[in-house]
Length: 230
Ligand code: URA
Image 1 (tube, helix red, strand yellow):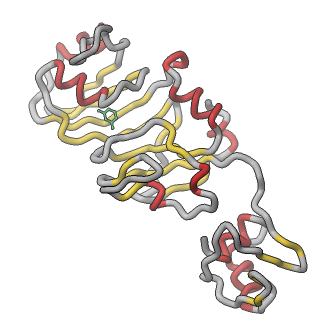
Image 2 (tube, rainbow, N blue to C red; image 1 turned 30 degrees about the horizontal axis):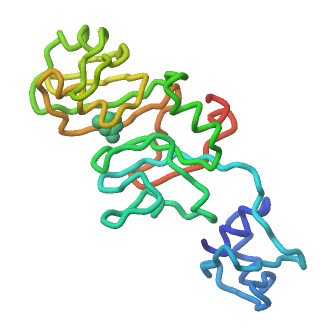
């Protein structure tokens, strides 16, 4: 993590003021004055400002990320980049993704270190809605609306899917809201009616929508109001 970001995260300083103080030689890292705001520190670094050893607040952390294609939602992966490579945060090992998206799925991903909060979102008991924009290989027949509302049988599953809401947006484009999170659920639901998902983007979790100002790969902290939604 950059020294100027660390200084901001530990204080009420703005990034520019933090940079100015660092350039003025006010910040000491491991006993040495460091004057480069972009200097990288790690979890072991001892950072002193104004004679005080800085530590990050111990509160929980909550972020939303606009996941691009080609990133996996796990902390480590031998073959692919992980969404954690898109974050610049300390103690990354403490963070986890709330409800994974497939490698090729884009859109809203929540990241936190608060296990109880993420449980409220992912636990089947809470039936938290997840809304996806879906692009399909073949035109979607309007019958799919009632089929998905009734529930469909996914391959290798004994129970029907829970009622889901399908909105047709174009011949091969739809919005689907589901209230559970089975493995590859959206792709398997469309496969069950003989269609193939060629593009998938998560727009919303519960009433929390992906911030439109976040470009793919960008993330931001959740506000207190957003955290309180779950
Ligand atoms: N359903 C899928 O099939 N894939 C996802 O990434 C999310 C939901």
